[in-house]
Length: 179
Image (cartoon, rainbow, N blue to C red; front, side):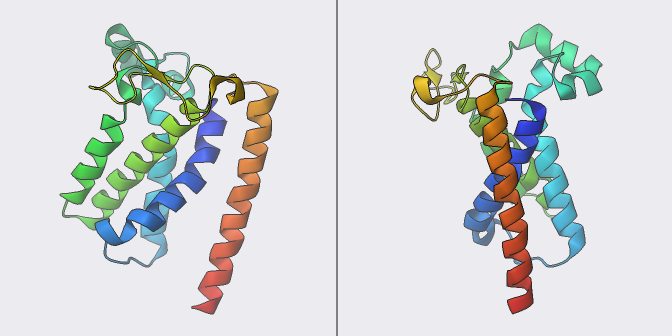
């Protein structure tokens, strides 16, 4: 999936997961600062797993880190394993400062959303459930229903996700007026 697709997919995935996980991780927080920290870190997290690819959006922004990672990790390798967002979730759970906690939590959800996007592509993710099934490539859909990165199907999926994001904004505005 392209960087734009990952960023656009991350918002509804993170919003949905936050709704489910929120009562387990955080006391209800109000305020625009925490909102901004959360969604900024979700978007950064949605790009972070591709640090292992020097030609990726984040790889071009952080070329030194990307080249170092790519020397040791092939693309869609360790940085794409499910264990990474789980480790970030655990880290956020044990962090005391609320701003840092929310930033780490957002990174975890963004990384997971990135993985979901890659699991929708034809390539899937090999070893996603590391250390289990290390040789198996996983996808969210049967391979004939998955799309190629940069294809017209991905473009259509991204357009639909933009619509979902707009609906989420409208819904949150309506809810804030009711409360």
